[in-house]
Image (cartoon, rainbow, N blue to C red; front, side, top):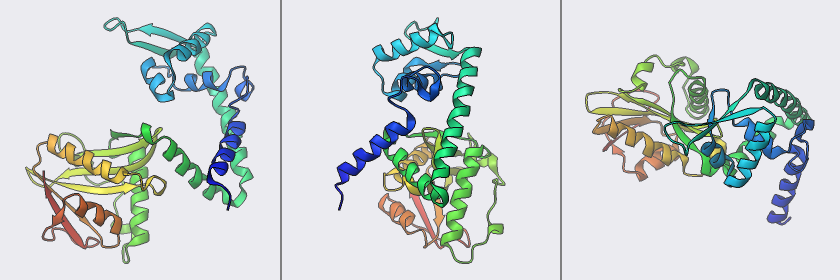
Amino acid sequence: MFDNIARLRRFNRAVTREVGALDHSYLGRGRPLGAVRVLQLITRQGTDIAHIRAKLALDSGLLSRLLRALEAEHLIQITTDPTDRRRRTAQLTPAGAAEMAAYDAIGYAKATETLNRAGNRQQSLLEAMDLIATTLLRDQLEIRDADPNDPAAIACLQSYYDLLLEKIDGLTPDMLTLPLSDPDNYRAPHGAFLIAFSDDLPIGTVSLRPLEATIAEVKRLWVAPHAQGQGLARRLMQAIESRAKSLGYIHLKLDTNEALTEALTLYRRDGWSDIPAYTSFPATHWLGKTL
């Protein structure tokens, strides 16, 4: 059996070569990859420099040098917040926006070429990439509010419904509503729709809607397969329970199906207990929790 460390280091070398990390001119446009990664995080509306530093884990000296170089090329402009002199913002200029469009076009073509090399194994390759990226970016995972009709929310719900259709016998697509028929119930101040993002890719969701004045229902906990096993489901449940408490709810309910064994195990381990049935099929188990 091949040494696991050697396999990982081989993978690192392959990625380094593929992305051009050592090239003085990334994608042939005259700048190293580090400068381009900084440029990618800057928007026309402006990006806080502290956010860029945290996102890329750069020391302030290196980031300052990269920003000065981009500014000298007239690709960005840097401003200081008049109310807080310590806060600086970088903003794309029209020339910077045009340069990013050129990088995006070249990058898209290169990514297409890489996927084409995989032939009929593209899906397996993408799933492996998702697993690796989510693992490496675990420290940058963010749970954020979303509107229930946002495209990211719809994508998460579709993946959740796909899972239900795969797992639950007798469930059919016409029993599932997409988009949600009652989106206002998942918006403040009534409820919430949370999405877990890994570098802006949605990888998990959970939501909350009101049932009575002090009772709310937790709905549609889902975690992408490549993000499972890292404690994300528990983090989402803790986040939605905290949100429910902040909205004034005292009791929570949820329903689930016996086929979703991992979810049932999580709920029971986190203090949810059986309650009388309050919904019908596809639910087979009903649980409650007092906050």
